[in-house]
Image (tube, rainbow, N blue to C red; front, side):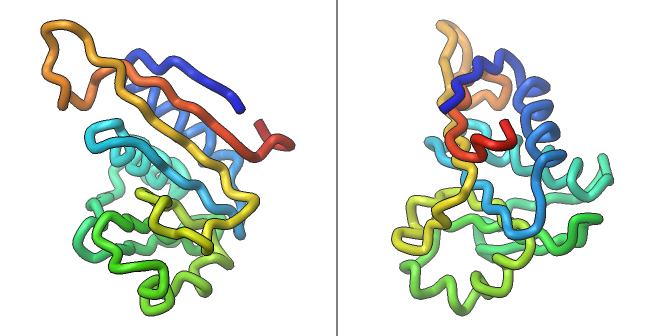
Amino acid sequence: MTALSLNTRSETEALARRLAGLARPGDAILLSGPLGAGKSVFARAFLRSLCHDPTLDVPSPTFTLVQSYDSPQGEVAHFDLWRLQGPEALEELGWEDARTGIVLVEWPERLEDLTPPDALHVTLKPRPIAGQDSDAEDLPREAVLTGWADRL
């Protein structure tokens, strides 16, 4: 387990870019944390870096549940499981096929028994500052990384 203090949005994005550089086909990166913790900021930077496109449009898959991207590493699937009706619904979303590439999962708690045992878990926790909007995307946060002991 590694705990990191991320003081700005750009530090969160830098962590995402670093982890994108370590990702390879078959990997699962699981993003946990409350609403406003920075999961979308992380996901956007991760996907832009992995796809080598700093202007890549990365919409939140909150309503579509999954968004696919082509990268030099192969297919990447960005899942947002907030609205998932249960892990059995993952089959309809192409979970098994997506696992041959790289999967980036927001709200991985909903995977239940389908959680890959070798996944990298990234837990983001905002650290509110007195007088600052607690929903601000540029709040300092803590990132706790678990997994990928051979790569981190």
